Image (cartoon, rainbow, N blue to C red):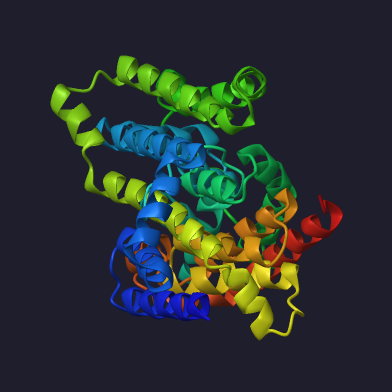
Length: 412
């Protein structure tokens, strides 16, 4: 009975803090604290905090999250992100390819509201092609996020793997068919030529500087390749719990290369490290792990299953819960944290089910009216954000159907 009261108090706290739009790290940490204290007092909170803090999954997650944000901030501060975007436009030339690849490649840098970096390119090229502004809105947001489905150094996919007790790679490869569907659906809804309408065949741009393009893209490629290539080696030497160290190694090498190439000042390095958003993201990751432990100890899954008469459909819940939370809050991180704190007590979390949770949260986040990329792009194009929903809603339905199909075909 006390566990049910604690969970109820936690959800009330969660709803209030989300309504107040407080930073997600405060929301997650406060919810975990209230739930723990109501169930077992301060002693229970201290115990849960100690277990969470000393868990290797938490340590790995915090280290990786901090390094990724340092990497992203350094890209911004050195101006490498702007130079990369400019050279990509020059190199790709063909309008449709530019509209697909520029937002997607810039998505390799997971910066909050990052679609604003590709919006000017999409707007300019889309205008020359005669695309309506609502299509430009959809295209920019949609293709900007394709890479996030399977990007192995995304902080959200890393958090998902940690909470789901699986690996980043188990989640990422299951998202590849979903990403393929996403690309095709985006093309059909946003870029397919209407009968009688002729699109521009080629952009008139300056010749690309391939030396600059390779230089600005190299650290990102190094991060991904080293993370992938050292994953099995780290697991074999240190054990499965240390496998995320391969991502740490990859990012460290990428950081070293970025510093060597860009030669930032000491002030720039300090600014990249001490960025407020980076610190808050690390705290949010810790809060997510704390909330997971609090809900696990409270047996929240048993409570929810009992309320539903024991007839809970794991796949349906794994889709509806994260998608609904992400849409309502505009954050996939918080949605993942809450969903993967509840589901382990209801059903066994397989890599396939965890991947379904990730894709569902991603879908809800994409269409959320609180999604910064969506808001910034709509604001840049000077149209209501709801204008893009005529394309976004059917696209999201197709994406969820693809994710469910992958879940059915890869049940383990």
